[in-house]
Image (cartoon, rainbow, N blue to C red; front, side, top):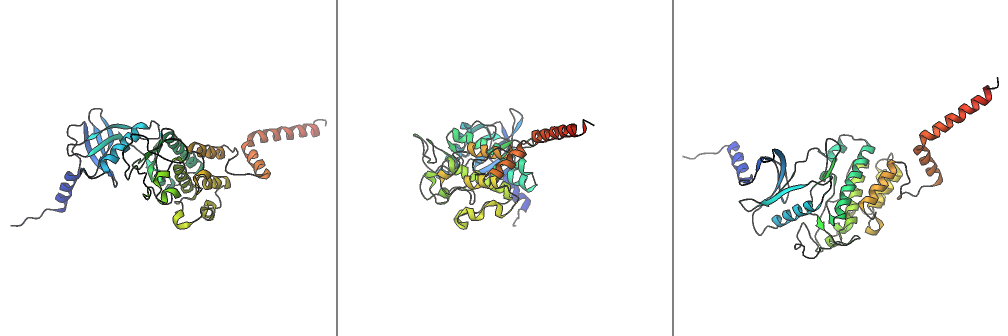
Length: 342
């Protein structure tokens, strides 16, 4: 007599088979909240501290699979970074079935692309962008390059807090400039920390030309600056930047071609950040953030060579209140002189 297992029963068995065995740890799985090529992220409860956390577990326990080493490297990189805009790691280890895992803060909020779709205002988005740059600049100062910055990898919390996520292909760099190098004693290269020519890491449209060419060894801080320029493009144009491999020179597809309402100084910032040559980009994420802040404060934008008329209009807008007060005072003085003697 043959027996059939219902779809519901099969789904339950599949879930049990895939769900990590957290016995011996204080964590209890609630549900899977994200899946990727390297592993799965679960929402879990830390029973000891009575709080929700997120646990990333490598997909395969096979020794030949490089995912476990990459996940451990990701955990070490995150542990190395201490910034409010970067998710902190609480714990790491190996499950009874041999799979590597690490525990991090449970992040609440929406992805940056979702915030844009909901119609957030331009200035609010620019302030959010500044906080993204600050987190990335902090990582660069600690010798870490993200290599896959994009709106989908940024979370915006309910109080406007920003978290840069998914450091799975990040790498540790040595020295300054754009050239990246593995420090002495660093783990052997892999898909997540590759220095070999020919490996393409990143997301089309956001990855720098040197990454698109597969020159992973040259991907450094200015490669992240390019990706940040791509995020700024997305915030202004409300669509992803063009893939330079397909579209060719970026100047022919500048943001204002999509929306003439985009201010020229902001377009100039995007074009400088996304320059083809690394040396032509901003020196770092901090310099990029500073130029955006200058635009918001109506100060001179370094990427935009303004003329006398533009400068006068900018200063008039920046000092609008004092100018109006002085103008009102002068009008009152004239009225007093004209009518005061009568």
